[in-house]
Length: 270
Image (cartoon, rainbow, N blue to C red; front, side, top):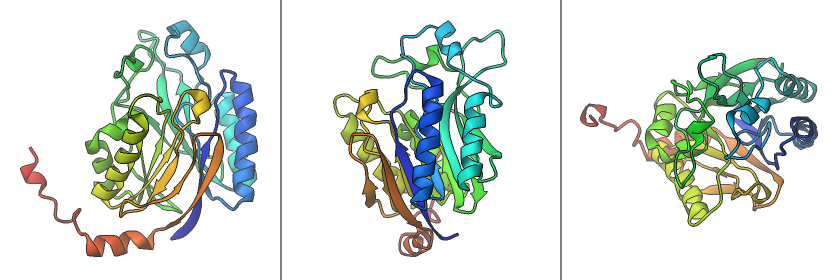
């Protein structure tokens, strides 16, 4: 499928997981009714918990992959014949470490978990300490073959690490999906916009950044950027579903004109 419609669901996330389940079901149907085939939700969409919460509270708002939130998402994927990507807090089986995982789940249109990813670079910056609540993963996301081309993925703060996006690109990603909860603040909108464009241009890939709305103390501004760094579609700061058409043939055309990926000399980058 070289041409398809993607939906970025810039949706508010409540503390109550049941409310968010219902919100996911409703918005998946709305996006599917608008012919989206790949639907993306933000980082930790399952629930929004204070960054000051203790580990006991955090674990109350975490679930295993076979829990009710993922089960609900599977039903939505099956009922609407779509692929879904969403964020959650996943329980950690290491009883010596009470932190949870910041997990992204990828479901196919049969409701099967195709892949998961544990965020590896945690948001210990601007006075935040994500590592107090979250256990980091130890492996980057391995791009996966999908009907929408090869899909790469990373999460929020990892946008600031060009090596992460480069890993996705050199492993074949046609589009890099970035679920986020990009905290608002001085220069944060500017940096969000600049970094998304940079990752698309550097790697001559499509980039899709899906944030939460301003109501969640985030910047919003979810967007899709083409391999030349042009923002083709962008949301505002409020809750909305952003739609964009992806044409994978554009990647080949761009890379013929701009073969920077093929001109890399990794033996020098040590």
